[in-house]
Each structure stands twice: as C-alpha cells, then as structure tokens.
Length: 152
Image (cartoon, rainbow, N blue to C red; front, side):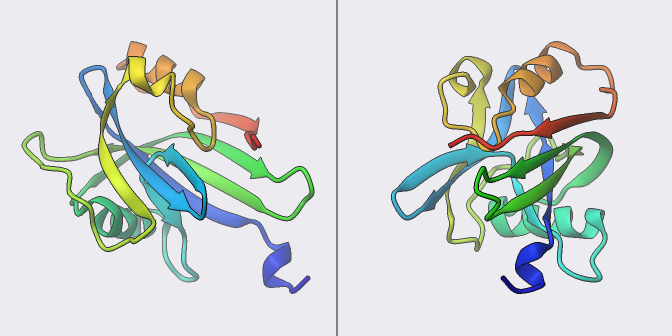
C-alpha cells in the first residue's frame, strides 16, 4: 500500500433543495449504479469551497453559492481498502437554473429527486435520514458528525 492509498480521501458535497426534492447525481462504475449528492474530491492546495464550486461545474454545469456546513461523515470499507471523509454543505443555485450534465463521465444522470423517490434509491453514502430531516426542517441545520456510512 502506498502512502497515498493510506490517506483518507476528502470529498465535498452540496445539498440543494427545491420544494420537497433534492439535487442528486447518478454515477455508474462498472456494474454499479448509485445516487449521491453532487460533489467530489478535494485537490491538494484547493479550499473546500473551491473544490465544491469546481465539482458542481464539472458534474452539473451549475454556478453555486456555498452555504453552511451541514454534516461530516466517514465512509470506510469493511476491509479497510477505502476511506472517505465527506463534508456536506448547503448550496444555493439560481432558482431558474437548469441542471445539465457536465464533463464528468461518471455522472450519467442529474436531477431534482422527490423525497418519496429518494427513499427507494441506492444512495451512497446512505443519507436518507439526514436528507429527510433537512427536507422537513428548512432552518439551518446543526453541524453533525454522522460516523461511518459505508454500505455494501
């Protein structure tokens, strides 16, 4: 294992809500398809905000305004092969903005998904509880550390 493989990956994610729907992206990797909040890895020398602005541009071609930090979670593979730390921020977009796929080839779909549908999706990490709480509570959320969120 190289030094790089032994360091957790830092990922930023953005939470955008319209009515009772949340902006999600669908990734495909091999035979796997799953949904997640838009975002991605932080590059060396890049601030969390810069990374999130870049990732939204790459994944969904949107300009964003970064809001408060909502939660932090770990995703650690049971065999220890992967470790990701995710920081999720509230993100604002223009109310008339149209979501379009960007240049990230892993993203095959992006759209506002109604809460009822989110409950049925393969979501990574599994943030159904937190998304449900955010949808129900439009006030600023308290910062929470969610612990491990790896699901096979």
